Length: 179
Image 1 (cartoon, helix red, strand yellow):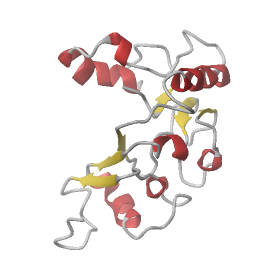
Image 2 (tube, helix red, strand yellow; image 1 turned 90 degrees about the vertical axis):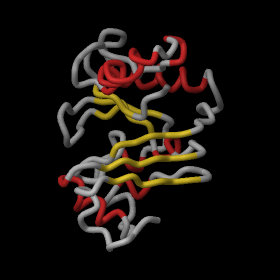
Image 3 (tube, one colour; image 1 turned 120 degrees about the vertical axis):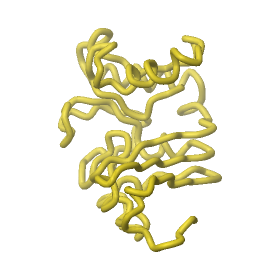
Image 4 (cartoon, helix red, strand yellow; image 1 turned 30 degrees about the horizontal axis):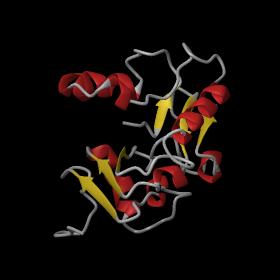
């Protein structure tokens, strides 16, 4: 288990993705600790840039430049962002495996994110959008606006890419669209 992005907050903070994942899944099914690779926190590194570089080193220890991910599961934000890759944000062009984000337009502003190339190293990508607040972004996404406008348009698996939406998020999709 690897994270494509994380809020740079203390371990155990309720806003961290890994805290939520542990609560609802990892601790419930008993995923071995050695198989969980959370992004570093300020508890471990005072500087978010050094924390991002440490995560890059950890990724490289399992592959060059990162592990060959089987599947990447990503949520899409109301603005079409994935990971901490936001519309018209400088991080969209960052080609490092993972990098520090110090000016996220969505709070908190300090984060660590994988780049498109790292996310797209997965054999399969599943992009999930749920809720009425995501309907506009899903509608834009299927019209292929490009990743500058809708970052979710920049993610794809090497072999398969799946968009999973609930009825509310699918409000702007043509009737009967299934692929």
